[in-house]
Length: 333
Picture (cartoon, rainbow, N blue to C red):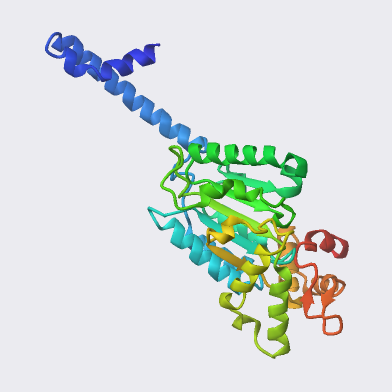
């Protein structure tokens, strides 16, 4: 009550100054002091409590570039596309629509890891930020009979969180297990609208993770290898069109006949190539360091040798990628 009164006094100076100049001066001084105190308190609060402000949300291009170049192995196409897409979007003060990325490839190739790197270089608290929201199909949308309820809940969740912070990030994992039609419920939020019912979604980021389309990506990598061409020669144009079509026409992709693709609302389909033996070694050495061990290449090579590869005779590409390494490595250390 007292706080309200002091703030009211601060806004009423012009009405009372001609009547009681002395008492009004005192009130103005006290109101100014209180305003200064509140501003200081608010700044302290912002420092300790995560808020939708630059102190907590600030894009670090240098950090993302460094992380993609030094921590992500064997994904030159994905690293290049993600860096350009995120940088262009974050540097645009007035984007026309949210950033929508769809990451595709076999398990263990780095899709989840890249979404984590993006979050860490935008939000001070990374994946732990209250403005980063992770949905997993099997955990959050398990029953097809409840799809109408899921649609309503998903719309409300996205709308509520973007209303709270326009610079929100939404990550949808296991899109290949998502019920067809569910993701279309948020299609209006991804479109070219200034706002919907007073809420603007244009600063938000949506990232979809899927194994769907992985076969097409693997086939391109195999063709390059069979032709004796370097892996680094593979470009986005070699993969993106076939990838988007295969996902659109795959009933188990989560994007089956979705208007998100039909209306070109996905900004980039980002392919993740199958990893080779040398990349598994890199992942293993990095994992040893993260576990507090001195990197031991002999140990990592023993672990990597026991994993499955294809083609069967040549053993070029890993079937499991880096995902199993944290648990497998413990057996060899």
